Length: 301
Image (cartoon, rainbow, N blue to C red; front, top):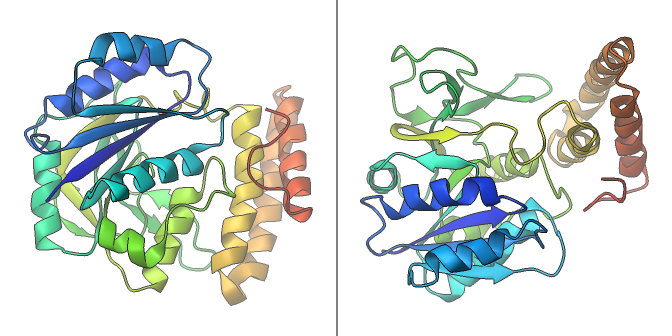
C-alpha cells in the first residue's frame, strides 16, 4: 500500500522546508512520496527546493505555467499519484508541520475505516495547545460548515475517534478508491469551499469521513491567503459559498440565501465602520461574478 503526499506551493518558500522535513521524518513515509505542485510561484521557492532536496528520491516537483488555484494544482498531484500507483493521497497545506507519527496514525485509522476520508487533529502552530480543527460539522438548516473545537484549549475533550461531517482541505487523507467514485476537487472554486463541496459530495455517495485525534499536526493559519481579513478572502468566500450551497442544499437553498444576505450585509457594515471598504467591494464583486457564472481565478486579485 503506497501513499502520495501532495503539497500545493504558491510563494511558500518560508514554509516549505519545515513542512517537507516533518513529512520525511514520519514513520509512515518509508514507501511514501511527496509531490509538490507549484502554481507559478514568483518567490524563488522552487529553486530553493531543488537545491535542498535535489537528491531526495521521495520528492517530486511539478511546475505549472500559471496560478491555476488550489483545486487544480491538487488535481494535478492526484493524477500523478494515480498514474504512479498510489493507493492513498494526503492533500496537505505546505504551511503546516506534522507530528512524527501522524502518517502512521492515519494508516491505522484507514485500516479501521476502509473506504473513508480521514482528517487529523489540527492545532494552531503559534499556540500548540489551542485547537484549530477537531473534525467539522454542518449546521442543521443551511448546512454552514464549521470546525469542531475551534479556538478551544485542548483538554482531551476531542480525543474520541468518530465520524464527522466536514473535513478541512488543510489535510485530507483520501483513498484512491474514493477518488475513483467521487472524482477530484471542483476547479471552479479556485480557493475556498472546495473542501466543503467535496465533503457534501462524499456524503451524497454514502462515503464516510472520520476524525482521527491521534493523528496530530500544526497549521500556520492564514499564511497562504494573507489572513481572513483580506480582499482575496472576502471575494472567494462571497462567491464560492453561494456556488457550494446552490450545488448541494436543494430545498434549503432559499433559506440559505436569506441567511447569506443578512450575514454578508452585517459583515459589510462592520467593514465600512472599520474603514475597510476594499472588503466590501471584494464581496460585491464575488456576488456579481457568481451571478454571471464567472468562476475559477478572479481577475482582481
